[in-house]
Image (cartoon, rainbow, N blue to C red):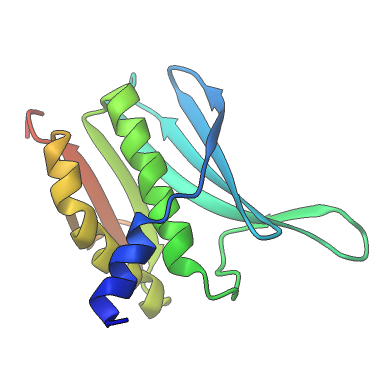
Length: 157
């Protein structure tokens, strides 16, 4: 299989997700890959027009059986599948809530994560354009972070 075919197959793989919360100010999606549960959080701070998105992994401690959530990479080698699924939740969120802006950040100290986010967003840019959104990225006002912005095309500047 050529690299392009592998990427196409990977991006076409759909991991089911479910909404666990949906209000005017918050939405939470959940999906599972292997033994790890992933949570995608959407929060609005401006009457539903501007939203932030973040996601976490939840792993049960094998000794205590307590669930622990964290933002760090899990080291499972499934980062493309995880982020593709996150993008699918973002797409569903955009269709349902129709926010003007959706923003998230990546720590510049994690070069591979910044590169992954940029590459995957470029891959999904056409699909996002088809549902009325454009994608941009750049330096954040938060020191040492990159900012990713998905903005409704018809929104005021």
